[in-house]
Length: 338
Ligand code: ADP
Ligand code: MG
Image 1 (spheres, rainbow, N blue to C red):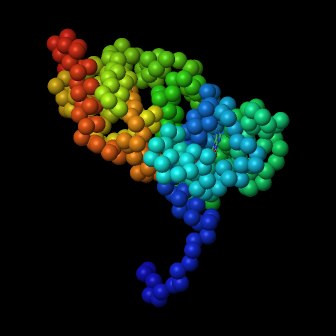
Image 2: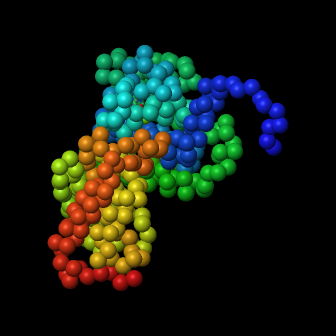
Image 3: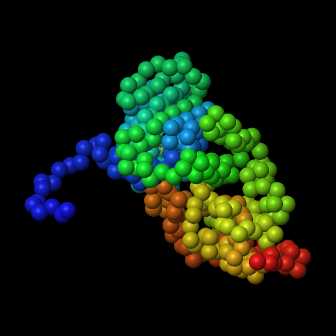
C-alpha cells in the first residue's frame, strides 16, 4: 500500500545497494558465468575451466591462468565500483577491456557465497578471500572464483529460476559465445562432474565449425572487409546453413557478443534476396572499430551497444554481407524453400 506519511530520506546501506545492483547484474546463473569469463579474459588467461553444478545455482567455479590479483588488492576486487580497468572518462570512452564497471564481484558476493583464490607470478603462494577474510592458500598462477548457493539469501529471486537443465543451457550458451570470440583461448565446461565441452586453442574457422556444427562448416563464406575505422570479419552461412530459429547468430563488436537490432537488421537485409522470410541466417561476425565510435556503457550486461553513427555502420555491414553473398552466384545456391 502507498505510504500515507512521508518517511525520512535515508541513504541506503552498502549491502542493500549491492543487492539492488545484483538484481541487474546477476539476473541468473549464466550472468555470473559471463562476468567471470570476462574477468578471466581481461586478466590475459589462455586456459579457462568452467565447472557448474545444478545449472550453476549450486556452484559456478571458474579457473583461469591469468595474471592473478596481488594480495593487498583483494579487498578492492570484491568492493563495489572498484576496478583496475579504467580510471577516467577518457579511458571509459576508449575502453578496450570487457569489464570496467567494477561491480560484478561485489554484486555476485552479495547474493552468493564467493571465494576467490588467486596468485600472481611474483607471489610465493596463493591467497584466498572469503567473506572479507584473507588467508594464505595453495594454487598455481591465476585466479579461481568459486560461487556457491546463488540467491541463498534472496529466496524470492531463486523462485524465478527455471529448471536445472534450462539454467545450464543458458550458461553453456554464454560459454559458446565467448569461446567463439576467443579461439586463441582454450575452454572447458563441465556440469555435475561431467565434461560437456572442451575446445583447444585453434583457428577461428575450426572453432566456429566445432561450435556451430558441420551444417555450418560445410556451407559458409569467409568475410573480411575494411572501410576506414571499420572492419567486419568472420563467417556467414550460405542459405543452406540457415535455420528455422535464430539460434546460430553470433555478432561481436570489439570482441563483445552483442544483440543489436541495427546489426541484426543489416545482416537480415543483406540476405533478403537469397533467404525466405521464415529462415534465419547463421553467422559468426565480428565488427571491430575505434572504441570511441561505440558506447558499450548502455546496460550492465553490455549486450546492447550504441553507435555514434549508426547509419554508416548499418550500411557498412549490409554491403559487406551482401557483397559476400552476391559473389556466390544466386543460381548456384538458390534459396532454401520454406
Ligand atoms: P570489472 O571487471 O568491471 O573491473 P569486477 O567486479 O568484475 O569488475 O572485478 C573487479 C576487479 O578484480 C577487476 O578490475 C580486476 O582487477 C580484478 N579481477 C577480477 N577477476 C579477476 C581475474 N579472474 N583475474 C585477475 N583479476 C581479476
Ligand atoms: Mg568484471
